[in-house]
Image (cartoon, rainbow, N blue to C red; front, side, top):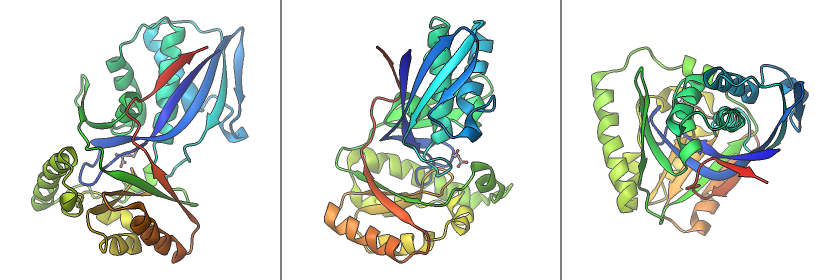
Length: 295
Ligand code: HSE
C-alpha cells in the first residue's frame, strides 16, 4: 500500500480566470493497493463507492495510457478538502488517481503527461496544475499540451478562506457565464492579470485591490453566492487586501498583508451577518504539490 497526498487549490485568482491557481495547505490523503480482483473503497461516503468515483475514473484513464492491466484496486480515503466548494476537491481526486495508477504501472508517464491527462478530466488546468506542482501556477492549454509556469509570490501575503455550508457545482457555475464578452472586459482582465502577477511577486500590497478585479466570471457567479456582496464591501475597508471567488465557488478567498487581528475581525463580521453557516480558515501556501509516500 502507498499513500498519495494532494493539496487543496484555489483557482481563478482574481482576474486569472481558468488560468491562475494556487495550492493551499489543506490536504486529501489517499491510500492505494493493487489487489487480486475487484474494487474496494474505504473511508468515503457510500454514494462514491462505485465505478463513477473520480479517483477510479482517473486511474482507469491512466491505465489506458500506460497499457497496464490492473487486477483489482483498493482505495482508502482520508479527505479534508470540502466537496463542491471551489477548493479543488475533484482536481485532487483526478491527480491522486493518475499519480497512483502511474506508479502501479511502473512510472510510465511524465509529470507533463499526468498534467495533460488530469486536465482532460477536469476540463481546465487551473486546479490540477497547482495541485501537482504546488505554489501559484499560471497555465494554459492547447490541443497538444498544457503549458504551465510557477509564478513568484512574496512571502508577506497571507491567505484566508471562507467556506460556506452550501455546495456549488462547477457545471452550474459555468452555466451562468456568457458565451461572449466585450472587448473592453478582455482588456480589463489582461491588464489586471499582468499587474497582479507583478504585485504578487514584488509584495505590492497596495495593488491587491485593484489588480484582483475581474470582469470575466465573478460578476456572473457572484449572484450564486449569498454573502459575496457583503464580503466585497467589507473587505473594501481593509487596505492591502483583496477578495475573490475561489475557483467556481462557493468558497470566498482573501489575500492580504494586513495583520491577523484586523482581518479576522472583518471576516467574523461578514459571517456573523449571513444566513448560511460559514467557517473562516487561515491557510498557508503549499509549495510542494502532490506527493507519493511509499512506506
Ligand atoms: N476555472 C474553473 C472554473 C475552476 O471557474 O470553472 C473550477 O473548476
